[in-house]
Image 1 (cartoon, rainbow, N blue to C red):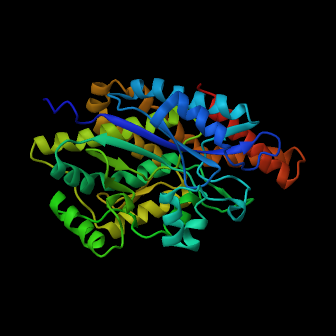
Image 2 (cartoon, rainbow, N blue to C red):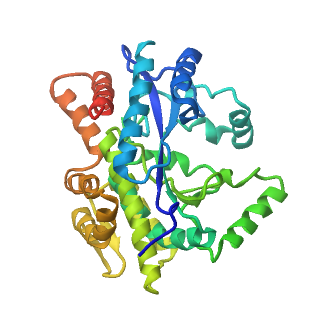
Image 3 (cartoon, one colour):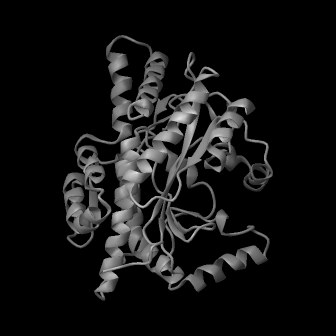
Length: 377
């Protein structure tokens, strides 16, 4: 069984927050920091919407193992240059205590236009995500796989949750990031479409009206990329630990290939109504891995540990083909013990139990995130 060489390659994009090493609050990236990173990494690093953010992107990689070396280099570079300004990067989707009102957006045409177009909604965008691109050369195949892969987006979200805190309080959600992001237009689960031409026609309606410039302003959880011949998963919170980023990328890659394999046998994954998949998306956003997801085929709520084991069975052949079985097995530990949101809450509670104030406990949580960022470098 062969595929075009470009199919099922992966690329990973991550957004980081920069914090002051003394106060542990958010801090703006000096121009010299960005210049130093860009001098070393060229177009693999860029400023983000807010001045306290920085974005990196790997090269096109065949496997998670290949992506590991590139991602490690990117993270290490950002950390090295940030340290020269008494700053540290963290890879969490929300900062535990800094206020969005205190942040300023980057002065670039693209971001100035966003600020103008989206008003007060975009001002609260103090959030970071991770995107996984999977190479799919044939446009109609991208749409067909998008329709099917959408079912698994809540599974990926549950494993990735890293944003339980917002402005100094526990929100009760494991991914508060989505609560903020979903206030933007053209977000959420992708609609079902029959062809790439239908996608293009739908986008063109908005372009012709002057509502958007191009499909890069379509911010669905899963979309055909506007720049590359890829299917781009955008559902996940960014991961404090590098190995967990690789797990999610490898899992996305293997799931996509598994669905393609079904097509080669004249089979496909059953497509459920977006209304039902959205219920699982909410469960993942609210509970992370703690309360399981709905198995619509069985008509019952199933634990995340059981769902992960079922996923392993579905993608075993694909994981072996990519040599990513070791990376994907991290999902079992997260399903059993919780994602980053659980670890952040544990760090906060341990500080409270040690007699620290709430603010000190929140600072300890940021220190925990700094340690996790550097754990695998």
